[in-house]
Amino acid sequence: MAMKAYITLLKSEKTLRRLSSIQLITYFAAWFSNVAIYTLLLNMKVSPEIVAFVAMLHFLAGVIQAPFSGTIIDRVKPKTLMLLLITIEIFATFSLIFVNTISDLWLLYILIFFKMAAASFYFTTEMSLLPKILDASKLQKANELHSIIWSFSYTLGMAVSGFVVYNLGIKVAFSIDGLMFVMAFFMLRKVQMEIEPIHNNENLLSMMRDTFSYLQKNPLAMHLMILHSFLGLTAFDALVALMVDKYYAGIIATSLALGLLHSSRAIGLVIGPIFLNKYLKNQFIVYVFIFQAVAIMIWALFMHDFYLSLVASVLVGFFTTTLWSYTYTLLQKNIQEKYYGRIVAYNDMLFLGSAALTSFMIGFLATNNFTLESIATLMGLGFIVGAIYFQWLLKTKNIGEINR
Image (cartoon, rainbow, N blue to C red; front, side, top):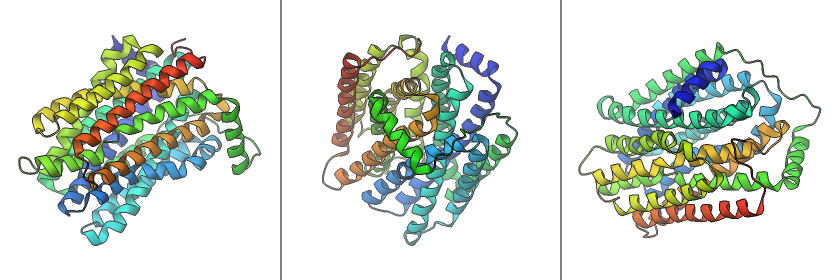
């Protein structure tokens, strides 16, 4: 029944249908190059700190630009901005071909920064666009659909990339990746969007001050942003790369191990909301936070065994999509339309900041004699804190159900 609802939504919303098709390609491309990047790093025999730093860079760009991106989103036509951002991704992706040795790491850092800055900016633009083209009754479904497409792209992108890198090489993977962004660019050019930017005479700093003033007067929005940021604890990229290097290098090729582990988790990301959708209430989400914590701890227990880790990875992903889409929708339904772009941007800043910090801590703890299992367990415990925090919000704040 859940899948039928998503199909019905796509049939009834032409713009959403076309944006979703483009999203499928761009997200597939983003994860397609991810396996190639981490395979390149492990082939270079870099330290855990560098692996973690590269993982952190994937999120750091979005943190730095967030204070400005929201204001820009509210003042520029969405289609124009999204085309520009895909163009940046095209050039950054093709340029990854020129990274060959450890001496080229500086170029890798720059390209990842700009590539992920554009990707994050594009995501924020699209998420602030959805409430403008859909009514409230369709917004939660659209967010769930967005998450499922992300997860499906993640699954397919990681799995296919693992085999492409293994059989054809890293540079071929980067080239295919760049061509997919070119395809997305031309598809987006054909999309008709009649969304006009917000016209006001405030300058950038005035709009930023106005946003902070709004958050002070509406603390619930800030609490919901913090709640969503707990999902940054699922930034497992550095941890998975270190797992492959430590436990699985002797039994399977690096690129194949990376692809299979990530795609296994993404299977859970795809199927989770299909099973959990009918239970979606505020109180149930508290339990989902706890289920997520337990799933990560089970993964930590089986981490040393490649095949058991694949099974546990599915469980880890099972609850993530529901947490992500539900907490995002709660925020969207509790802010004024005037502030969509800016608040969504600050929300993404907190989420990406949490993910960047998680990536940094994985590298820091791994180089200070913490086992990978203990690091994963700590990440799981973070979701217990999230459950307690959300329970407190439900008791102290007036948070309505999202389907009302």
